[in-house]
Amino acid sequence: MIVLAVKIRSKAEKIEETAQFLGKFPEKANQEPGCLQYELLRGARDPQLFFFFEKWEDQTALDRHNTQSYLKEFHTRFDELLECPNEVLFLT
Picture 1 (tube, rainbow, N blue to C red):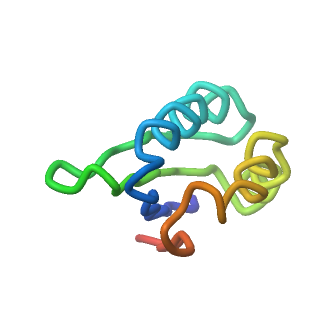
Picture 2: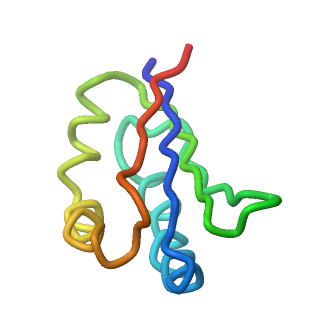
C-alpha cells in the first residue's frame, strides 16, 4: 500500500477558487481503481493550507491516478493558484 499526504499552499487571493477546484478531486479519485482513501483537508488555523491524504493499493494505482486529466489541469494551474510548490510526503 502507498500512503501519502500532499501539502498545498494557496495564494491568499485564490483561497476560495483553490478550494472549489480541489474540492472536486476526492469524488473523482475515490472512483479510480486501486484508490483506498482520498480526502481533502484544510488548515484549521491557516485557510491557505490544503492537504490531500491518500491511500493507494500499489504504485500502479498511484501512477494511473497521476495521469488523470484533472491532475494534469492542476499542474497547469500551479502558478495561478499556489503560493509555493506543493509538497508530497510519503508515509508509513
